[in-house]
Length: 372
Image (tube, rainbow, N blue to C red; front, side, top):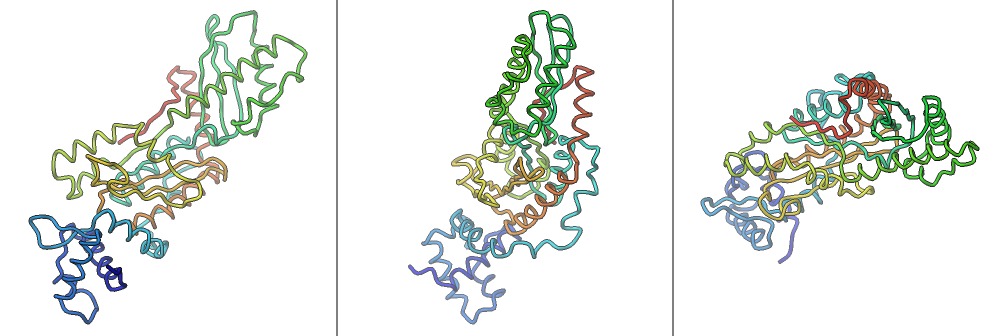
């Protein structure tokens, strides 16, 4: 069966109306709203054809049609991509994120505020994943003596991320030795990619064998930060109560499924990080996202960058009926604004100050998750 331009036009109208009204769309409704010189009977036949082709379906209790995953996929791939940018122009549609972000904020607070703002703008669930350490560059390292043989390493990256590691150090090492080791590492490793640190030769920097052993011990801790962060990263989620207002989630079973999903940080992280660098957007619809149980959800995601190097992911999770075109426009502008915020210096100095305070109080923890 040929997929004619008229069928495509009718399919687009059905999807747009269903997105707006959350009600099955009848052929009579399409006939009354479309500027086509064809009869309702012809439109009804075309909609029957679209159903046979797999683009539309209809609930048992209604004569109207609703889009299938295949229908939404056609809409996203062939229509919304041509409409990027012109749909979001007014200030009330996309407030400037810089109005709530200051340079004194740490990266954690920047991402929390961003997730909250994005949820309010889209009326869907927003998720932001911080960049991985292996995308970052070495900025500064501190070594502190605690009690007895207990010590603390603080690693700071160019993205403002701060990692702490407690370690025990046997032997006759004093504060001067710790300062010397930190000095060697800060001199040799500054602005180096975290990925390349293990390949750096620091042995020729000092003839002191004990210092070399200490520096190598600290390098092992830095490498451990990278290995652990591959398995766990920070994610900031906001808008759970907002998405519950969508008509799809009136059913208590659907509500429990969404709540369980939001609590599954590992799964959310896995979904958002499964993103090719050569794509601006990742859109997963219905069963493309979850094969069963939560196939009434869809995800639109994009990347933001920090100082042109490290990247994180922003995701919008909503009903399969979400307004894809509007969400993609908002996300496209929002990710650029967020990148500009980090390029201006926000999220760096504040994060260091925030974690230094935690170190002093003993409350620091690298596994920080923001949810609301």
